[in-house]
Image 1 (cartoon, helix red, strand yellow):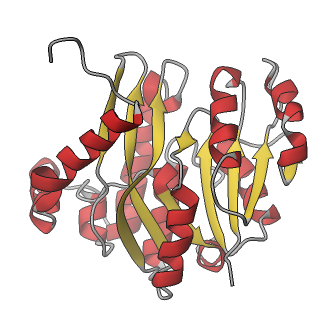
Image 2 (cartoon, one colour):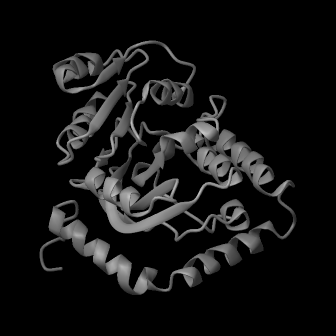
Amino acid sequence: MTARVSIVTLSFNQVAFLEKAIRSVLDQDYPEIEYIVIDPGSTDGSRDLIARYQDRITRVILEPDAGPADGLNKGLAAAAGDIFGYINADDRLLPGAIASIAEAFCNQPAADIIYGHGFIEDLSRGTCQPFLASPPPFSPWLMAHGGMVFLQQSTFFRLPALRRAGGFNPANRTCWDWELLVDLARTGARAQRIDKALSVFTLHGESISGSGRLEQQYQTDQKRLFAKLLGREPGPTHRAACLAARLVKLARDPRMLALKWPALAKQALESGLVTLPDGA
């Protein structure tokens, strides 16, 4: 039986990027996709763009929300698939991503989460670099100290596990994706990684990550999630522990620099995501 995959795109005044995000889902070579697009009130032409594709979108939700996490909870409530994933309006899936994820869940029936690698596209610098996700399993200590990294756009979930974890925290305005993984880890969710690039995460001047406009709140949220994972505040040796965690991250996957980075860089070049200057 073919698993149904629910994908949610949250859109708010990102019309310059939105069509690429929508097309990256609609053009996937997988037959069972439920696509949900949420727009809480864009005024930049995004809603007109969504209307152009509405006959190919399973459900469009056009209603106010209390922030990105609240909007994603609306998508989660509407989703009826076996597998759940989400991308922002300024990100995109790579071709074949959903088929790869569906196959991986089929081959790993005990996995609650399956994630892969991807690319980080920085429009302000004109670069696109491979992003390598950490190997499983979840480690609360490594997660708290920056020793485990995931690309949200390349991470997918079994819907029941996501609902057991309580969905997204609507009060979190900076790192709701990371808090979701923290909550999943606390519920004992099992994760598997596949060594494929699945998505592109775009940084630009108007994005939360690219602009840095919520940096102070982000640091507050990170401290709160540290305590959520370990039951205490960061101590005087926190910086040393973070360095140790990053070294452990590499040691857990010694192929990371030796094999995967060149392979993903090659994929970036072959896909046209990155071009080298003349003479390079």
